[in-house]
Amino acid sequence: MSLILAIEDDPAILRGLADNLRFESYDVLTATDGESGYRLVREKNPDLIILDLMLPKLSGYEICRKLRAEGVSTPILMLTARGEEADRVLGLDLGADDYVSKPFSIRELMARIRALLRRAAPPKALPHELRFDDVVVNFLSYEGTKGGKPLEMTRKEFNVLRLLASRAGEVVTRDDLLNEVWGYENYPTTRTVDNHIASLRAKLERDPAQPERIRTVHGVGYKFVPPS
Image (cartoon, rainbow, N blue to C red; front, top):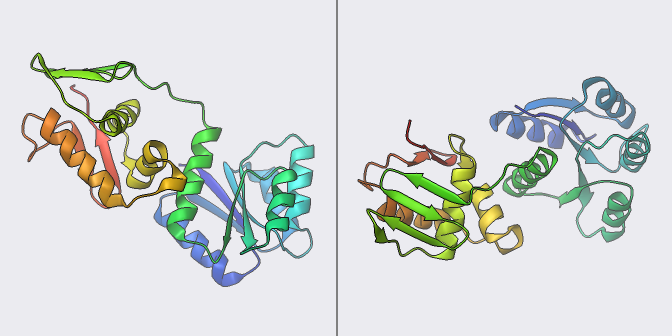
């Protein structure tokens, strides 16, 4: 699992960050000042850095500047004061990849972390076609058949299925589905994902009440299980 370094001088915020990250099964390192945080980046090579901008000893701005000048490309997610546009602009100009304003939503924070980690990882190719059981789906032409008969599927259903198939055997969270299929800035509710999954099962599964291919991972999301 990914290693995340959180550099934050507020003990309550740092404790909350660490607890929620560990709950999501990330490995976590913490630092309460800029110098310690910078040293941990160089020693431990984390996969992502959550960085408060206003830190003792060495500011978040200076950490960004130093790391990027040294060629360190680790994704950096800034924590900024709400409404401080100048802080965000400066941090992004210095090399940060994204930001979350305080007080922040844990759900939003986790979604942005997952998005940054995905962008930093080698890309996975999206499949052009999917075949399982008696189903054939062409994602380029948005056409499909089941038992030789045409499938009536919406574009969103094709895109949900394609994302699940691209990560076959892996859990895809509801937030990931919302982010990738609907777009982060157009978030509907997670119930929208559940409704599309139910519709896909009704159209694709042999027994939608006992799905074999599109399975629920309770409290997390869904995964596509290909035939063995």
